[in-house]
Length: 218
Image (cartoon, one colour):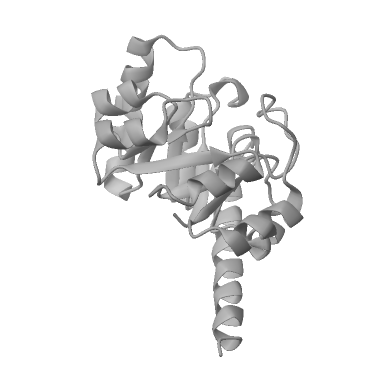
């Protein structure tokens, strides 16, 4: 997992169709799209996911479903993202198979330690900064917490929570391999331009970080 990771929120799209915002973001450079729906019926969620899956296909951008393994199975999504109170990782992996992309949120250091034994595809470090889109968490990690996880974990890290143009670079320098955004793109007047700028910041900073790591190799 690497680059700009879009997490959707229909309520932040300002009345625009969600598909319109997703398409603009992908055209701008989003490398992964996670559909997060807390209130839609199962039928409506499946219908929406199918529309977005078709939209993403020409770009070869993976579709991840938040929480709902049943919806991911129904639409043959690329994977799921699960939290600590959702379906256990082991069960999701058994249902979705070895090729599925499965991300896991970590909100405490104990979560990080337990995840070390799991073959998850990435950890969602949640939240890095306080944010109104994530109100059910146990405090924020901050950049120091993100850096601590990077030094310990064997998994790619996706930073989420309060990420935007002003702090995406700092998150990558602290150890994030991808930056997940919600309001920064969904609420933007021009989601394509914001996505392009964010994707550019993330990729540039990753290259600089990797160059620095190679330079310091023994």
